[in-house]
Image 1 (cartoon, rainbow, N blue to C red):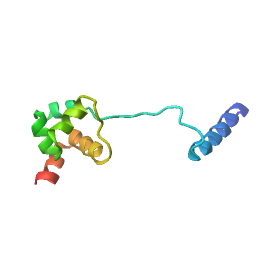
Image 2: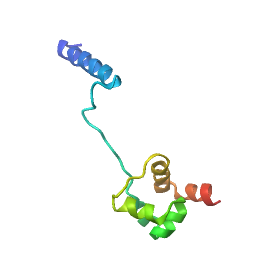
Image 3: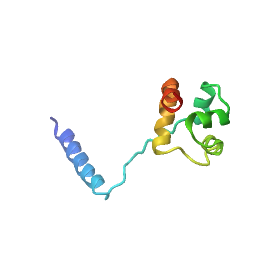
Length: 95
């Protein structure tokens, strides 16, 4: 291993330790928010239908689509599954 590579590796380990101790913020953060409107459109549902499908209010769908709020936690996971396997969501929630 070259000296420069080893030096960079050691620096990375030091930064990781500081990050884990909450003494250093990450240099980059990637957020992949689901595109609620695209998911709903792909399923050919109105906002009300999509809200019933997911078990949330139509206002929640509107707020997500208009970026007034973001789906988090379980809702975010459910949207990811709805995007990839809508029949699985339907079966689980309405079967």
